[in-house]
Image (tube, rainbow, N blue to C red):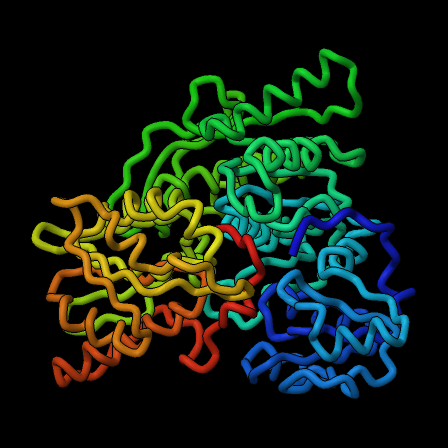
Length: 505
């Protein structure tokens, strides 16, 4: 895949008829929807049908299942994601015709021109923080435009073209595309080395965030005061100011640290929610969240800082953030059967797995266990982080480890799920390695008991295992299923190729 370099942005009206390859992906779908809102001719394709694809068709897009060269029609511009290989027949045809080919980040960047842009980056927390900012702005009556890597819980789209002058985007660092966005507000939730198959080294990864934070149009950097990588980023930005080395934005820090500009205090975590105090410069007050974990309190603090800078008053910001109900695949309740709750979560980096399992631990009562179903994602990530994945997964009581979801990568000899399963420390989680995808759900159903919390972990097709676990539990118990938070039927669940690489929590 490699790293992208920013290109000169062209306004959407100058792109002409636009064809989106993998239009059923959550992030790509949001951009295509906004092009439709502008009245532009849109076509697209994906390798299989989905609710996202059908939604575009219902709005007038010419969509196709499968990839064929003739489906480009009269397109002048073709939009691709980093997951699309050069041998894709539609991309190959676009190259042959000499059509304009844009990465999705350039198409999204074109929509930001002339708007007050907010770009939310970070190794973890991007999706949730972006959604919190957007939800609060909508609640405050500002009607922002936005593109989020995961749809709001219960919705079918991650994008909207609003009437307001603010546009909020989830900014993906995995391939360097976060450098493409013309943002006034740059948010960095954390900097935790990842995607080193693209970046090469942890230092290069950190340098990419420095470049993002100090881009020419950035007026303010909203950055964690707690995460070590983010703290180092802040120090690097301040050194840049002292050295007179170029543009430096205003810095607003958030977190638990006593010196944070937006500070979290008095936090308690119980069940699947939390409560704490949040404020800045003597303002602020109590907040509650219906989503679990310290990481979500931090995400809310980042969102609060953005809202404050955009002029939303303290009381409104806290009130609207408290209504946040989650996004798809972020500790999302899929169903409950016979006292067993089954959640689905996008966590795939060791830090995310650890945070999710800590949150799950607060949500089980005495006697209840945490059952983690982990699908390692990407052969390169598993090769680089198998020890850390194993250590994080050890926080569960029962761990079912699936084989690696390779997604866009070719297999690497010796890199399998067994590498992670075998490294989970003795005396921690009881481990079951289940490489057969079809056997994962019945294995989990056989392990789970009343009072347990089951959570599927990974950004690949493990998301389809969660409803299968619910079904298997129902068959085991001969009970009807009580689904609570499932965003879509199983055949509408996002596939690995529909999920944007590097999406955060």
